[in-house]
Length: 355
Image (cartoon, rainbow, N blue to C red; front, side):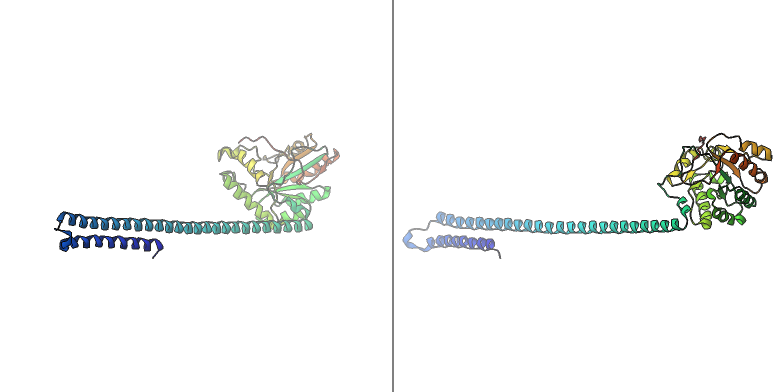
């Protein structure tokens, strides 16, 4: 029992004692002859006074005890709330610490992964400097500015095929380097990708299927096709190259038939993902059917620029391209041009996009 409760009980006992005293006094008036005749009114007053005092005392005690209990309850509730709040704060702190710990672990894992990838890249560069041609988002590829140096970039699309080896032999004969934008149309010649690469030529990506209706059916379909040919090439040279050529070039209009506006989006998206697309500012004309050798040579040699990217094809049916190639090379070499393969610093030709 608290000191307050003890005090309240003591006070109540005192007043109850007084009440009993008044009541006894009232009774004594009934039998004490020295006090004269019995006065009933005075007795009633004494009894009522005693009872009133008792009631007042009881009420006071009950109120006092109630107030004290209320204060005790409130204090207990405050203490409980403080305890719960402290627990909540502790729990929140633990959660934050846990989340922070997970974030730190994730950051460390990502850092470690990046370091391992960079180490692997440096080791690959040491073995093959051209592995730097791999797709690297955020790293610049090529320039739209021509150099003063007279350079011809021969590019061959749609191979490899049975004609690719013949073209490689001609390039070796004239000491020329070229770039091959490959497909998977003739898988039996897949090994030609590695053969061309080992000879110092650049390998670029063209399309896995070269099916316009499939490639340009959506952006997702395009990148699915691009990823397929990327892995196809990686199997041969060890990395996915960053050089690509759109089927039909970036200025094609056939894509509009399948997805209006797709070329405008793709031209931006491929560069965001670390690729660079290459069109041409010179054309042999061998993409058209039934072109004679003379026509191919005339079309390919009628160009006036310091940096020239010539479109050719090494597909299975391009026999005339093989025949015309020595004359094309001889013409430009006589004009003081050097034949180079595309690299990260090479001139980039972009057409006006029509879709």
